[in-house]
Length: 627
Image (tube, rainbow, N blue to C red):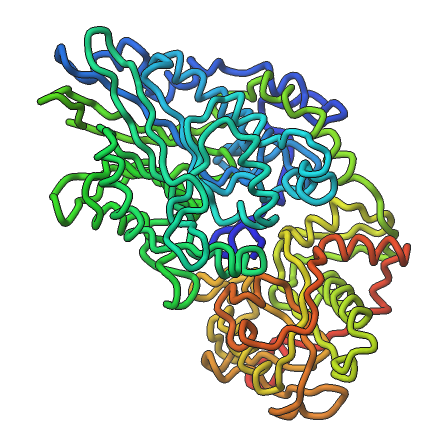
């Protein structure tokens, strides 16, 4: 989806935020208090408390006259988080739970940790890489791509500005880099000082990389010894061709990660790389969220196992924290070290590679990896200052009122009840499609709409509703499309969606929160239709749950045609729902759904649930409504 994770089961939005311990002072207009960026345990003290070895210890890590330790640092899935801020709540980011302190997000936090490690290790012995998904994911990313696009203003993208200031050595492309189109991506790459890599993203119909495949950095690590040449290969995710089909079809294809690495690693070695690192926007599970027609989505571990000549892999995409994973290459028996830092800048992966110079070249003789928590430091004030004006502009934009709501609406129960707030998404999608197809033959078809509960904490207050409220409801940068489905196809679609619920006995206690997310199905993959009346019988097994489908008080005929308003992620095949990816497309004007909601609300001036909320679907058990 143009979502945080249409591609993996953990796209949890940042919907809870309050002051963290180092930000108890009142926020300034930007929301970034001086206390947050200037006060707190020093980076050196926090790292020492966490057991991080300082420069003296590091110097002893690889004893010998021809030995040295180099440190590789890595981020992934930053998703346009530049400062420790939650734009949906207009507050400092906070996900604290009882007994568990809040994480911190943003490159300004990462900078504090990176700079301390460089001071400890020596700048000449460290490298900094990223494994992708950097420019999309927060309202800040959306704003500078669509509201005030840097491609039109000529401004430096805030992520590029911070990455350049932090002196990244290489950045791999993630799938979300393609969300705003190739022209926008090319512009961002042109702003980056670091090489931006994606060896397996090739010109359509060829094996020629559209982007730079790899880079080799020369590190002068010790007097009297030859420099170390460290190569990094960038790999992106094959799901790009599904999730951003509209942006890449006929222009870019994404090849298998294993085959691509097997092609390029020998090239890098032949060019003189002593050490080979892979930066891969791909999880490690070996599975895919899509069918088998594309290469494996989460292939990082397969790359380690099957491709000889790799020393370490920085990986991402799954939004997990994996401090260290050791994998044995099946061809050579060599051990490959891997690490995945938690998303949004919450963690920094750190590899220590002990090298020895033997027979005219450097090689790894020992390795270790860990992740460091950025909540142990504070934002680097220089990196906050770098983006403060752009951050302020987004905060102002997000707090702009768009309409008045006659009553409060909440998505808290949207995963098991037909709610007014989700019906509002469907209302906007239906109205937008209806206006677009007026005068076309398809205008004669009944229009129905699909929406999913992206954020259980979304709400509209009674009174002024702001862009922030809308963004909290629709957190992904999806665009609106419309396709034609039959009644039989819609039933199949709804049956697939209903796998979201576990099977529940008819007499079991009513506990709906415990019935959802069966098989780790995320909330955003529970699609709900408006315009058609139906029941979901959760007492029945998967595949036999949709009953009583009607349209206009008449049973839906299997061959009856409907015009279905749907987002581009789902229509392109995201989530694996049946029929929709192959359905004829009637409307695709590249209208961002979030912006459509804002425009619709602004034009009406009022949001009144009594005019659009219809309870057209319900959970039942043996035909008896649960609620």
